[in-house]
Amino acid sequence: MRFMEKKIRDASGRYVVTVNVHEAKTHLSRLLEQVHAGQEIILSKAGKPYARMVPLQAEAPKRQPGRLAGLSLDEAFHAPLPDDEFAGWDAPA
Picture 1: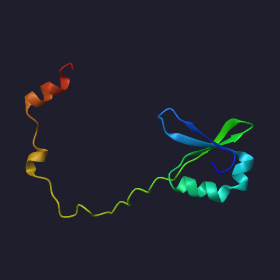
Picture 2: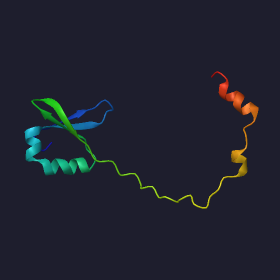
Picture 3: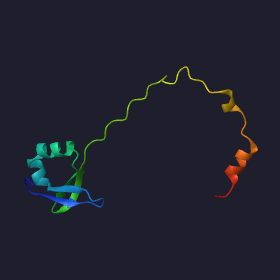
Picture 4: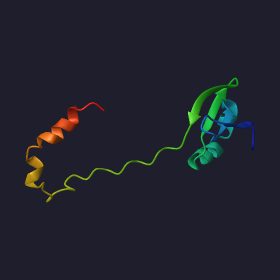
């Protein structure tokens, strides 16, 4: 522990660092590096949790219109389903 930070375990068993807001302002760059590396940091004010710093999740890949161009469905896709298939849908589990 570098400064006034406490390491505690959360409900899932991971270590979470708790830092006082005043210390966080003083050492913000250092804390950002820890968060960027995957560490979750709880900011506390007067000893009570106040805010959480967590790493950003990677952005989902952008959708590409036309990716499925040229693909077609077989005619069987549009055919009516057999009666025994429907019977399974209404049966109690």
